Image (cartoon, rainbow, N blue to C red; front, side, top):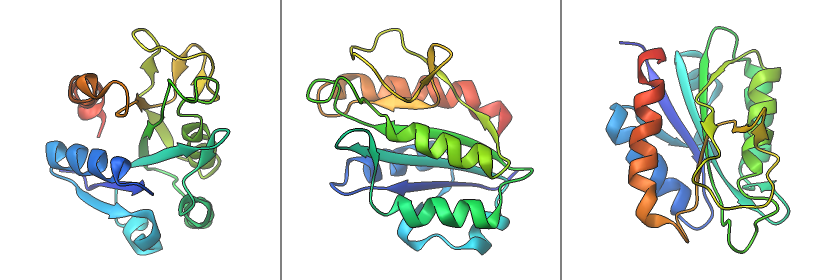
Length: 164
């Protein structure tokens, strides 16, 4: 089986909990972006990258150095899927917008990106993370829609698992 790691950046613990859930379901190692090394990236076939969104669609703080690490290490030949945490009620104009920064960084580093998700069933006004009518990865609002988190994770994993 190909080696997959789940990498997260979390300030309040929500994104970490979701990363642990995804990692458990895939049997994958879970790594905080603050602890990720170039060697871990190089030895993995697949990376699942997750971030929370702050302010006006900003990345979680630890990801700024993490994006540099991804770009410097390179992701050529690697498959990358993304997930993001946001608050569509309080921040409907920037919901999960930080995922777009991870998307852009992974694409620039040469990754094969998978796991886009339809915006159907989501309530938000705008998001940088919507490209061609779909989220660039799994968008989760565990604050206001925690009753949908598990089902969305399961559906998303089912949609990407055969490509990991």
